[in-house]
Amino acid sequence: ECDKNPMLRVEFEAVHEALSHVKPLNLDGGVILISDEVVAFSLGEMLNMQTAVIHAEKVDPRIPELFTVINQQFCAHQYIDVPFINREQDLGQPGLRKAKRSYHPDHMVEKYQICLKTP
Image (cartoon, rainbow, N blue to C red; front, side):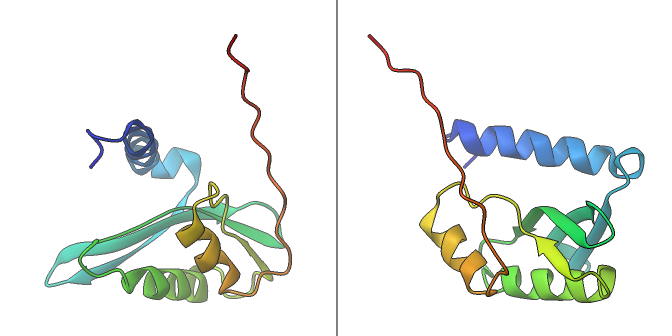
């Protein structure tokens, strides 16, 4: 769908860049394999001693339940002693916001978008 949606295209390029530079960016990663095929992956890093940030999480769209599995397993294995996980922005998308709230966050930060008014 990236060719149809410019926002998805930009996201694809950002994730591709991150995957291409995992070591220099000091990113952590995790994958789920089914029959030797990657069906889910996650990328994150430590923000500070108390907080890990999950930058990207992608799953095979035919198996949407993998979002819960990759999230839980990646954090349980990579960030087991980290008290806070920052799931980044939900971009105002109802599905993402619902998913974030289902984890009972400690807090959520209000975000605002500024747009130039066209004459």
